[in-house]
Image (cartoon, rainbow, N blue to C red):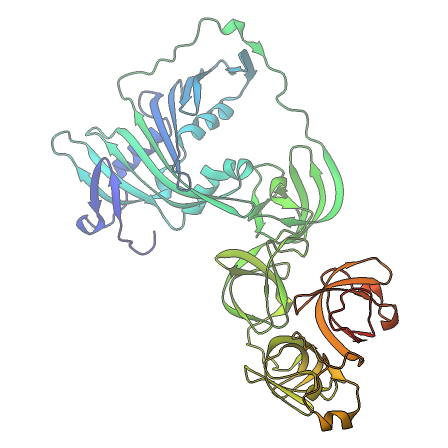
Length: 562
């Protein structure tokens, strides 16, 4: 383990702290011999009789899987090796029993009793995979020991060393790499109880490991307890109907190889092996996102590649011909160099969940290998293309172009307007007669450009209508009698100016308007030279006409429409 680590360990049902234990020591020679012979099935009884209880819990789901294995093997040092393995699990209601004798392995598959030839070495590897028989003392170091003066039993607590935990990764978890993902042992420790005669009574191993599959990680804790029986010679009972087992056909077809030249990417951390098999020597590895050159593939799932000038093999499930999106952690605040979309995923085709405006900052949480930045947007994950972000807060110009504002006029002067909010505008370019048309208190809309007041008004729209009665009679007459009004002089025409909303058209020349003074009027617009298409329902317009009857509401000839 390298440096001493302070920890609290649960072993043999007793909580013990490292600070209270004796100094670290190696296995005593007699204990080392007893341990190794017991776990390797080479004790003085020439047999192995044990029960394995294996509990695996996902720290992600807290769901426990419990498996029990009853295993008996006899004739370990003799010519005739016999064995029986019974396995039951809380995941499966049926208990499976398998047997080995005279070089044949007997099992039941889909309700059919089958048998196949198997060498002693092959069967012993199967036994080893169930109870980790090759986990001998060379991989372990003693942390401390406690002796029970009543029973004479000694409890030894051990752990994997920093140097050997990698070996455990290969011995115990390579099958997970092929089936579930890239598996790595994090910690391994355990205990064993040895009786006064030096025989191992029980061994318990607690191991945590992490499985990574397509960027997702899940950590498991596995507790494997093996109880060894020392109650005499081991006898393996075979079923009476072994003759009813039928010889199995080849489990799988011969492996074929197909040549292929392509670029391949690792989707997770993977080993490179010397052969297309878990038995192949590991000659290197790749990290998620690394590229490699494919030279072919096998029918049983291995990819042949070129690795540092030699031929290697990787497991195909953890590769892709499309470059995977690999996100590495990052933190800090970055700023938008332009207005940029925030998307659901790290690609331009994914949905837009927001916009980051130029100069605005955002918290980043990661960077992808495809040019995107992962961000925290309203407590949700989003992605922004990295080229549009900067670590430096950009200087945002105060100049605006064709902005729009609606407000109340505070005052007017020749060529200028000031709103109630204090903004002022130069109207020289609007062709708008400010003094005659816009008054204090009017509600207007201004389209403007510029960096500060006074802004340049490009367009002014007065939202307030003024019904004017402009008399066309002789100025001298009014000079003589200023009390004369338009109503008294019925022979004089006046100019009417009214604003309102278009409510109907005939598609040609007819327009009906609901005017701001509360009156509905019908206008003939052909004389006003205005396209009827511009005066559809809902349009707000101002109409000017000349009339001798201010109360006229129909057949009004519009002279000007704005």
